[in-house]
Amino acid sequence: MKYISTRGNAPELSFEEAMLTGLARDGGLYVPEAIPTMSPEDIAALAGLSYEEAAFKVMRPFVGDAFTDEEFKVIIARAYAGFRHDARAPLVQLAPNHYLLELFHGPTLAFKDFAMQLIGQLFQFSLDRRDERVTIVGATSGDTGSAAIEAFRGLDNVDVFILFPHGRVSDIQRKQMTTPDDANVHALALDGDFDDCQAKLKDMFNDFEFRDGVKLAGVNSINWARVLAQVVYFFTSAVSLGAPHRKVSFTVPTGNFGDIFAGYIAKKMGLPIEKLVIATNQNDILHRTMESGAYTKDGVTPSISPSMDIQVSSNFERALFDAYGRDGGAVAQLMEELKDGSFTISQGAMETLRDHFSSGRASEAETLAVISEEFVSCGEVLCPHSAVGVKVGKENLSGTPMITLATAHPAKFPDAVEQAMGARPVLPPHMDDMMHREEHVTRVPNDLEHLETLIKERIAQR
Ligand SMILES: Cc1ncc(COP(=O)(O)O)c(C=O)c1O
Ligand SMILES: N[C@@H](CCOP(=O)(O)O)C(=O)O
Image (cartoon, rainbow, N blue to C red):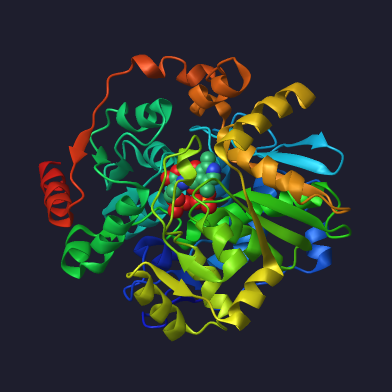
């Protein structure tokens, strides 16, 4: 299995190399050269397996010879051992034909744990075997950061620097990132929004002297392994509702487009998915793009679903790559145009995108209303991101079962939930003293040179 860049001008890599490399050297994102498929019989055979067993079967073909079967099984087992629900990703019913996939039972209470816990194990295995060390820099709008810190804290051969937008994450999200006191964890509060954090991260990858000097690695969904791990729960949830004999649809609260892209990969692998619905908050660039064919940046407005406050949606590039017939030159051209704020997608590519994806948006008032309605109607307390999904999912109900992804635990966003339903959700016991823990954080300007210098100094001190 080889991995190629969406911009067509970087070396082809193995799974392990692509995982440790992060961004391709031409600025693109790695994708498999070909998507392995599963037959209806293969998919049917997932029924009754544990989450870990299903994960092995779904991901194995992508991994090639990087790990033996036994090694990969041990890695998967360790990754999910810390989840607080036996099913890992339980499905609950909200209404006739509408289901909620709870993805917040991992250690940091968001869907990011599914991939990050696995990546943490994969990195440890690879780095130990190669006797190497890396510097991970991550950009976060709130959830990726804490998941990465949890997965890599305390390791000798990894430093983790997390850039988060100062003042634009919830208090709990910030505390999750700033209270670990491990020497290899560095929380950096950047003066800017998430797009600034992600842009700086990509600038670091494109500065080859810095990148090679610190051995930069990425654990955002830039990293293919992140996307791959997220493919699994599309299979397990669909199979539990009757796939491959019955089609299902998914609605995915979307920001950086990694999660819904994982659903698209599941579909390409053979999972019978009728619709993949992109659900956006008021930062609705993806919804506007699906309607108009023009991807136009419009500034980020802070919302009550802060993890989705994104305008430059990194993984959309992977979808464009396929929609343009895997023409890396065409994608590179669009990304060049985006530097001036927008690009227009060709009619043919838009038709391909619309074959797979539809979209919707939820305003702040609609998000709050859904939190309250679902609590009253079925007792489910939604986080604001999941509520955006449920609102859009409801609008797309048909004869096909709809699975909406619940991407975070409501207790990560107590203010919004309290505003909606008048009560504050409770943190799980392992986090209940979170607000009283001491914070370790450095405020940083939105400046590449400053950030690179700081990172080099911190590494030198270790
Ligand atoms: C809670 C939550 N929901 C939804 C999203 C959006 O997911 P994606 O960026 O994969 O589109 C994020 C951020 O990634 C998130 O943290
Ligand atoms: N919402 C994310 C943004 C980064 O997304 P990623 O999937 O590329 O890591 C967050 O919570 O940080």
